[in-house]
Length: 249
Image 1 (cartoon, rainbow, N blue to C red):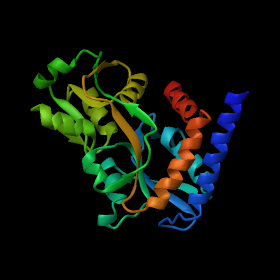
Image 2 (cartoon, one colour):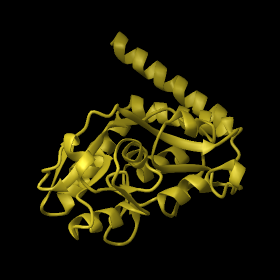
Image 3 (cartoon, helix red, strand yellow):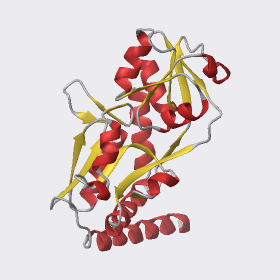
């Protein structure tokens, strides 16, 4: 009973904080929480059979925006464009980039990140999952432009081809134009489930934390999102959404 009371008290405090910080939130378009995203990144964001943008992050953003009295609206584009669209120094067109963005020190210079909500590692997808990390130096690697997979591959290996989207990278893999794709493990798993004949191998790269990259200097919005996210973590909603889309894909 004491434990239950403590949990309920904590949730009440989170709700109070969310309400308090939400009052001070300003967004690019009144009443909306606009976010850029690259919707070929299952299970995080992708298009369903009706061309709707769905996935872990769109569902989280809808819930978070609702708690702040806002309407979440996804603005689809390629990943490089999604990062650019949320940069204040480039005339930000959206309030945040929400597209499986890894928290990195260089990105902290251009975004204010929310709290982390999930962690991933890099993986290798190839035909039958035959290519291991030890073989990457001798094969052609496909990556999505702007991703940490691209950064790691270009730093460590000689033969790297960049694509605007993962859809194009996997098309190249299936056509034999590249031998493998280096990408986040949860995304790799989704493509392996969707495309026949593919398999996945782990890598030794360090764990990466995903968060939402908010316009630099919009502290009130970061605090508001964090308060809402904390509530969704505390009541198990975040874990449930992640599990739901992992199973779906």
